[in-house]
Image: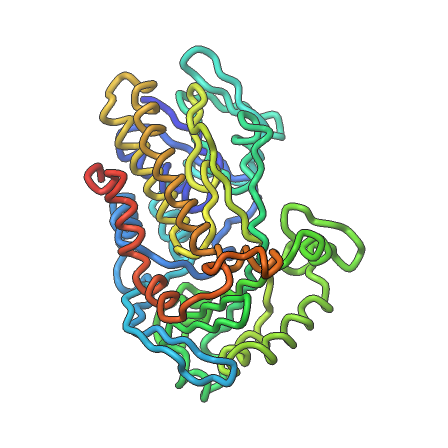
Length: 414
């Protein structure tokens, strides 16, 4: 039996392992963290392609795994509804999907505390070397280790994620803690606020126990705000003066930074949403994107965020990782004994698809990135945005993502 070594135990790595096992491979996941990742991550959007691939991976995705939203609204700073549109979005939670994928993977196929350092290749085999000296041998190594991929760094050392010029403040509050008047007005909505030069989206997600029952859910807020590199560097510096270049852990964000953004929330966004944001414990993530010029290096292949980093506006990073995993498994299966041919098929397909998804994210973030330019250097598209168009794009994300999938022929291969 052929063996795949999957580096990275997040959603993309788990899906890849399941689908490779589904075509008869022995796939083992190696995760650098010592503890389960179930408590990590926040809300995420789903798309039909993701749901289909999850079911193929053995996850019985049903209505209890997500929250269906029917209305999208844009609220002004006073909380008045400016625009309302119908929508059809299913919002789930990162930890909900992680737990479901872990539960259907044999325990011995998921190894914690395994920090990958490098890979060696010999003819038609690979050897993964870990920090503790462990060496694991296989026929294929799948790099699914995220934005700061160690696997990618070995083969593309000069390729770095590019900062988009803005960051996302995130906040999640348990449904039971949402003020009742705010709950009645806001909780079931896909809600937007569009302060000048910024963008905020909020929606309900599964609660801390991955529960989607009324009263046990949570409300998720994503607030995009421009920040130049100097400001970002300051925000990523903790109270002890240590700079965290790869992203500051939420508990280390300085109190003055949190106090400032909560004051801004009261001044700039709808009071219903501000009431939730200021009661929560917000944290931020810088927004990056990245395009890999190559995905296959001998018997090593990149998938998910290790291959392409897309901005989060389409809510499709997990869907893209799942599609990478599905096309990888299908390409290998179709090639039979010729693994190299299967990997070439995968690379031809997913290079074009990944670039298209990155382009979508850049187009959606154009207005936000442009905030760091002088106004007289901005295009008309960078200066102005139409509220109705913003809501329509977000409300119809699955159609948009599905169009890219179809344009690259991926729907016919699944």
